[in-house]
Figure 1 (tube, rainbow, N blue to C red):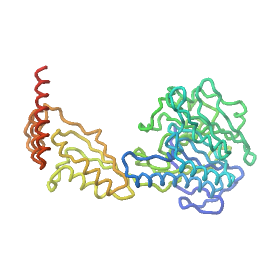
Figure 2 (tube, helix red, strand yellow):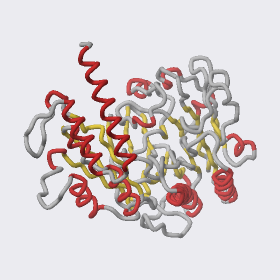
Figure 3 (cartoon, one colour):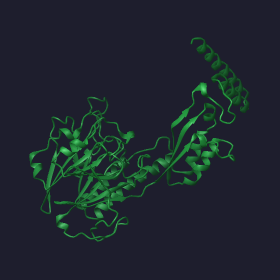
Figure 4 (cartoon, rainbow, N blue to C red):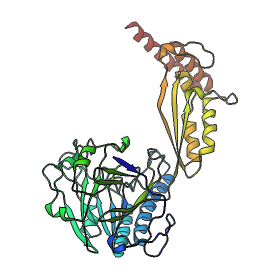
Amino acid sequence: MTQQKDPSAQAPIMGGQESPHIKDGGIPGRGSVITVVLTADNHLGYAGVGQHPRKREERQQRLRHAFQQATDFAIVQNVDLFIQAGDLFDTTAPDERDRNFVAAKLAQLKQAGVRAFALGGVHDTPADAQSVPGETHPAPLLSYACLGALHYFPPVQKLDEQELEAVTFDIRGIRVGICGLGVLTGQDDDCLAHLRVPSEFEMATLPMLVLHAPIEGLGTDAQFLDTRTQVSLSSLEKQLTFKYIFAGYHHNYSRTTIGQTEVIVAGATQHVDFSTLDHSPGFVFLGLAADGVRWCNHISVDSFSLQRLVIQAQDFWIDQDSTSPTDVILKQLCPICSEDTMVQLRLEGELTRRAYHQLDLNQIRRYGEEHCFALAIDDSALFLLPEQETVSTETGERFSPREEVIALADEWIAASTDKREQEALRITKEEVLLAMDEMKSKR
């Protein structure tokens, strides 16, 4: 497997207009080159959990704008093919605003003479109605296909029994063939190992497969891995049908040669999590000829910036001027927060329960809401010391679990100014201590 970096030099321009992202390099021999805009994982309609409605709306606007940048680019450059490789929508039932927006963009592509192809992804392909009661609505892309706005490749239910749908056509005398293959949730084998392609497809000069599936060796986006199938490197190396595979699913752009096949992963058009920290969202502009790829450029789009801050538990008290670990964290957050930034705060290491309770995560979240577009707190690598080893970070004094409960409860009672709340805390304290004594007596 050969990994190729996307060229940073000029990408060809068509139509006499210059893109703000690439420089005009001209296209010699345009007739022998098939031009393609490839996009995937646009996730229109995605909404961050717990975000303010205003920010949720802004994020959805950014998602639509990124897809529009891809369609506008395709029209300005007068490309031959516009290919969407899955997860155009983030849901199987997108709202009317997103549906109408896509309809308008596809209409513009058709009016400009750009052929559009698409397949469903794991997010916007409805589950089989027989396996999931209530999932009876059709795939959202199907309505566009019925109106002639694009060609939609439906999912293959039984890979070992069903022949892939193939589309073949001529562009300036070059025979182009396209198949589409998207995996379904619950499929647990290598979808590429069971391919059955119509015999006439093998006559295509440029045979392409549009794929939406995890590919071995290209990384796993665990939060999106809701299907157990995976395309193996061995099946990619063995297949001889497709010269080009245009893939979605993975959110990072990549171009890889596997065997005799060029595998190009479009990458997402917006950040929806922090798995793409080192990659810019965008789409791909391709020039294909009978003898191979003439150019393959990743075109960046407007997007939020990502920042990751990692703080070790041992550093919570490193700043002697701060009165709490919360202050230490806020002081480090301040320089990287902005209205156009998504920040991931990752806390790592070991600390006592008492020390953990000194962290005011709610205050940190409120700070993030006010000073950056989104703040995600990841404390999955933060571990509490076993109770029998609990030691005060400040004094070195050991606490038993019972003593720790008493100390914390007394601290809360002293901090409260409401007599009824104080009484409730005292009762709760006694009940917890009684339960601990009972558990200890049963050992």
